[in-house]
Length: 104
Image 1 (tube, rainbow, N blue to C red):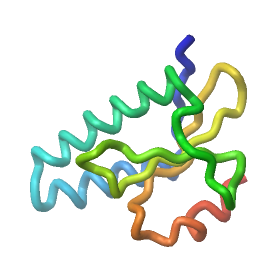
Image 2: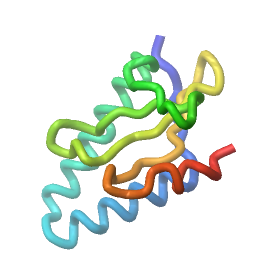
Image 3: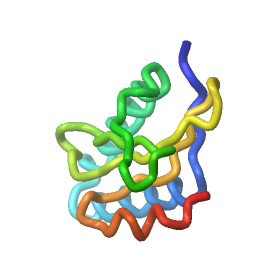
Image 4: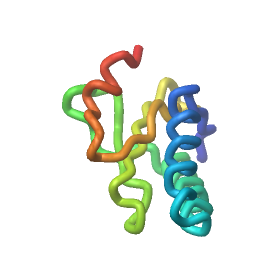
């Protein structure tokens, strides 16, 4: 059974910022990012355990968006048996711990 995927305001902001950044150089790549993100979110909805656990934040899982966008990570959790909540989408070069520290 596929779970419903929700996103936090922070994750929505992350996507807007990433797409804007990519589109500055390549609008086609920005559109491809959106498609590949959507595909991965579909995979997560079908297989919530697909990501690896984040050691510093055991309630979170993470997975790369795709081979092409391998530096971008989706951080998500499963608050119940029906929902996946995407909490952040971050570039792997960022200070991940600092961004995730304030997540309730």
